[in-house]
Image (cartoon, rainbow, N blue to C red; front, side):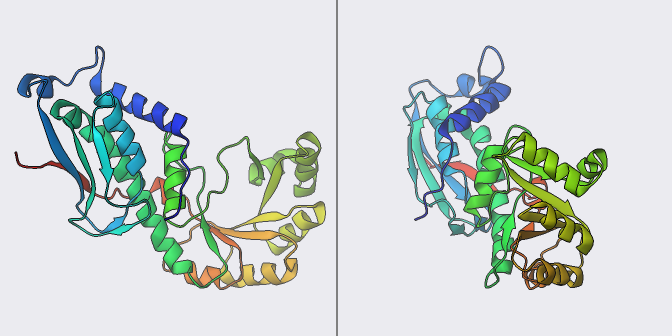
Length: 285
């Protein structure tokens, strides 16, 4: 089993924010409080309603832990990254019934979203299997959920490109225009932040050669055809890592991977993945 790392402090922040949005102030679940005795306990199952890849079970567990004040037992049946089919039980939770139902929607919102991202990413990873290319995510994430969505990409077999504007410098077209050229922009970034990794977006073979001459070791090849990418791969000759980006689809993934690039970046992993339908079912009493 692969140990996918989650930032627990970030998980807690997101869970508390999501629950506060659902419970209001003062926090309350009016339906559950009105219909269920405080002392009642039950067992519920998280169940897949569609085929896919599961991600986010530890996040769901934290939701139930918060609403039950630590009194719910969360037992994972599936593991992160497992391929599941409709009807599979992913986890079994036993605890105060009110707490289970109060947690339900928040837990499902998070795990369904994360599993949807993992499922979509796995489709790309499967398409690239056998090539040297890996699928990358982007910063096109849901505000406030970036750490969870990028975690889900890893669970699905993809790789995180960068977490934000702070950890990697990415010189794009507007930076080139503002600085005057690729070379000027690269030198300015390197002089200001000598320890930060620098990536450069290029759209032509000439720009790729200029960027490498300036010192770049990672190029984003934007909206290039497979034919042009093949030329760039040959011309750069391993002097920089190469990423294909822009208007990629599952149908064209293999063709782009065959050019010899190192990565395919896909914003749709996080901005367009449908959820994986997951439900919470109370066991009959």
